[in-house]
Length: 133
Image 1 (spheres, rainbow, N blue to C red):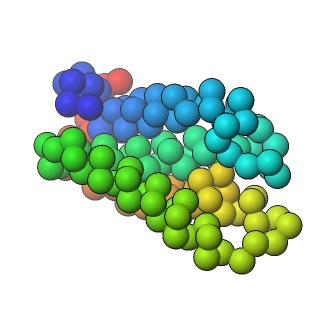
Image 2 (cartoon, rainbow, N blue to C red):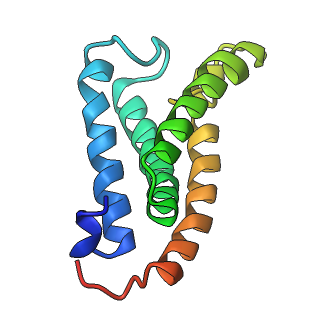
């Protein structure tokens, strides 16, 4: 991220790193090793990508603000623990729950996108998002 930020805007750095991070997971999703058996593959790829690109925006802000890689490591670890080991197990399971919850559900992606919007606005101001892509 620090290297990308030398020639890209905050928005560009966040989107590129989030997209790379998302696509990195796609082979596991496509092979069926990560995801669920309820929603179609295209839905999982889209929703997961929105979730990951959104959290990438947040982690980009934290990484550039603190100068530490550890903010992203802790964020990623916490996200995995809370989503996979806390929130999903305590959610009432219905036939259509997979469409809404977990890393492949629309609710999680929408919440992450709202938080990302907040950090995108902060990052544009704090990191001078006037550079060209």
